[in-house]
Amino acid sequence: MGRAGDRPVPDDRTPPVGGFRDGTLTRPGTAPRGSLLAHARAAGARAARVPHLRSRADLAALTDLVEGARGRAPATRAVLLREAAAGLLAVRGGGTCPRTGRPAADTDAAERMLDELVAVVSEHGLTLFAVDAEALLARRALLADDEESALAAATRALTRLDEQAAVDAAPTEREHRANLQDTYRLVASTLAALGLHENAQPLLARARVIAEDDGDLLAAARSEHELVRVLAAWGLRLARAGRDGAPHLQEAALRAGALHAEPALLGSDHRRALRAVVALARRPGDTDRSPAEVRAGARADLEALGPDEAPTPRLTDHLLVVLARARALVLLGRPDEAASCLAAVRDRHPRGEPGLALAVSRELVGVTADHLAAVPGRRALRDYTADLERELWTLEQARVLSLRTRIAHEQLRREHGEVAAQARTDALTGLPNRRALDDALADHLTTVASRGASLSIAMVDVDRFKTINDRVSHARGDEVLRLVAETLRRCLRADDLVARYGGDEFVAVLPGSSETDARAALERAAAAVAGVPVGDGSTVSLSVGVAGTAHSGVTPGTLLARADRAMYEAKRAGGGAVVLDASTDTPADGLLVSG
Image 1: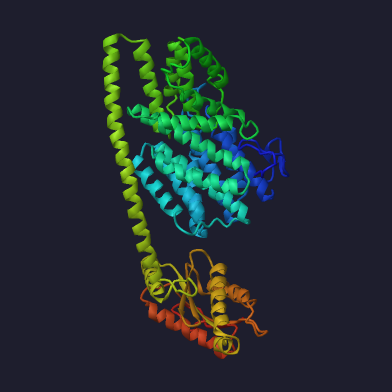
Image 2: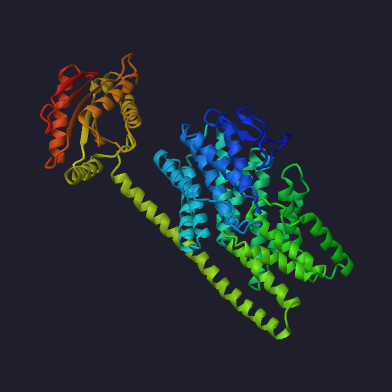
């Protein structure tokens, strides 16, 4: 992204970089990370355009990027999955294709992308991308008209966003700040789609401040355009409810005009949307302009907005352009064309922006009532519409109150969960403690009894730990324990449990592993730990005892005692060894394995 003085590149333009040919990424698995992410963002931006006549090609590009980069780092995968899921959901929300009348594309892949994104952020603790996942889940729920689920997901996103740790494992501070801006914009646009414009505005202000501090002109323009969208939708919503939406529309128009005057920042599709906001902010009964000036302005608006099939960056922009075009047509005395334009949008059934879609319906009612209907029907229709709008306003205010209450409850729930988690977590290493180990071991033995699954555990002891404390320092001893804990956790599988048993002892629980498999896993872990320096010229070694079971009737205490006995066999042999318990309930014999 550009700094001051650089030439920015809008979202939907991919700069020529290594690994690309004719705009297509040829080797996503080996492409430079920056190039890969830039290409994904550009493909996602193209997929979000409305109307979209090439959605299948762009969706295929997104899914190919994700599939071709499966071996990349979790943080890179998270960005790719976020962009792909957002693009797929945007295509689904755009409605049916204007040419064929059929859905623009099969977007079931969005479900897979979202599920994988949730799994990646959960496994690797990428809390910032977890916020993105919640925002995308809210959008998916909106597409299904499930407002309750959408509000719940938006609540979780806002609550997580306010937490201290925003982990994205970005390689640089600048990229972390860029990811943070993307998250702010994604959550803000989701809140606006739910009609929660007031909650969206502060998030965009934060994103804008970060961009300006970094001198990133393009990022600042993106945040500003998102704010224009929010303010315009907010103003239109207030006007529909019979309230004064002019201040919000005027502010949106001022900001849109300033962005429109910077053609290098945003592409022609963005400028079309910005011109629509300026047009919508003009008061219909403006007495400062003569009828001739009004018609001249309407003609200029129509020319700037372009034809119906001209693309806009997002569904929000498309609906704003349609509203502005319809109003210009009415001012030029062409209400039938305005009604046809509005009806065509309704017939495509756009989803995901219920407030603006309703604004299009209301505009259609107004055009047909004022220009194409008889007087009695016109009055009845207007009264009915006004009553509906008042009721919807009441429901929307209740939604705002519900969000505040939900956020408070979610914060309390998470705080309670953190307290409960702290009671089951070792403070020094961050691993589960003895209490958590006892519960997990009991659960796994229940599975062994009911399904006949295998289970192995390992008792791990740091050799000569007292000497480390005495000869170096207790602070270094604590650091050694933390490094051992981190290494054990990294070397074992995601579904294996590593707990601190007490002092310098750890326990590893390996569900589904035989004693032989467990021994091999612990040998790898012990070899990795052997590289940890003590501080007096020596390195750390481990004594490990492994015990397993594939039969019912074994208690946690019995299994721990057998692993403990094998561990002491390793210590008596001089340490640095992994020993299998000789008294297992399986045919395996005890075996001393060199560390």
